[in-house]
Length: 110
Length: 150
Figure 1 (tube, each protein chain N blue to C red):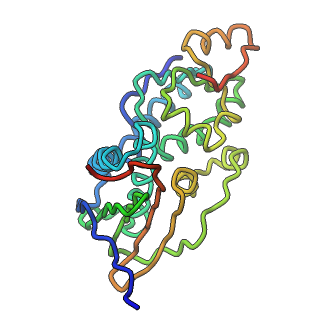
Figure 2: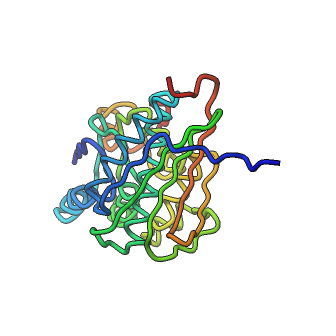
């Protein structure tokens, strides 16, 4: 499943993001690609929302993979070490294909 | 010997304590940081740090109350941008920046402390103090040459 959050995710907007994640999980879709091409920035509320579901997603054989982050958002992910917790790809296509072969390496050099 | 003069704020923003005003705080911070000489990426990061500090005010000092005030003061001194986030809410006992273990956070579904940790990673210094009027969170980013208002 592809998710396209846009604008910024902070304490005011995080509920919409959480609902989108829960909708995916609730419908049994555990292979999720978060494409950040429209994402301007993510505050800790958004990062917390990702952390809140990742165990459940992986526990069901899936993953949340992230792609197309702008420099600001990528820096934030790296600052917090999220690049070690999540696989980050340059392109959405790479992230999608990584689920197909099961071995596409996560990159942080987007 | 005379006491060093405290720098005057170059800009003071006062908004209600609803999360819908975080975007206003974010935008104002981003623009002020650019005026101060930060590049685009750093200006966004400073805006994020101020967003996090303001979110903490709403969630902890005001416990979600939307009818209070958050004051954001921007001060420029020689070579640094200083942003103070001021509230008159409940005392928040935060003396140190928390350590964050992401693996543990994920397994425990925790996210508390992530915002303060992020503030510490972005800014050069993050301090909290309690005054007779409330809490002050002070964020400082040192700037390179040319970091001055035109």
